[in-house]
Length: 235
Image (tube, rainbow, N blue to C red; front, side, top):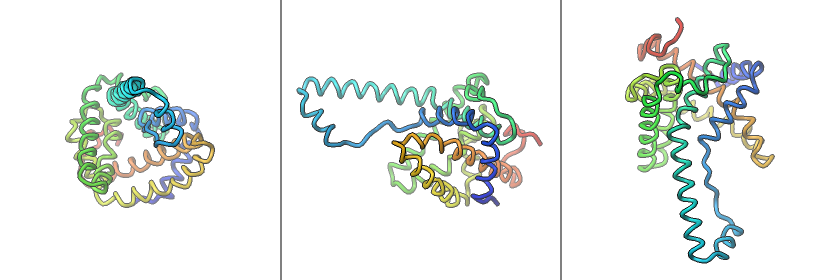
């Protein structure tokens, strides 16, 4: 079994030797997955109130187009960079630190397979969330290992990646949720400096998640959910 303390200590040890590389990779992952929506405020309402109907329509159309472009970039490029970023943190945890792993999926020629697996995962989580928030969160944790699995084997069938992630996280979701909660203090501290400090916390969080994946991966092999070869692991 794993503990939060052990995972975090291992993550800190990894970051001691490659923090700034990890920082750049974490920043890329953060930017391609960040939610750009902002809540309304009084100044925003004044802005809209001072515009004519035609001008407001143009602005809405422009924002709509920007939103579509942002979603397209997230899906067609962001998914690949996320998997590559997870690859970086997995390999860093194993003693190999190369930022070139960010483009790993493109070099492996597995673009469409990774796209299909990540898109399938996103659709499933979205549909579960439409039912109720809690089931969506549960399924989010259930399928959270998909990008890590694809980082190890980008050619794995999309349904198999989802199935294996579900098996890896079985009985682990509550502990994973508590692990996420343990970073809240760090993120609140980072948010004090106008949110800029958050990006400095992300490498620590992502490195810890990579340590968690390593543990769950080994357990999956021991339980017979998968083989060393399926995940391209070194025995």
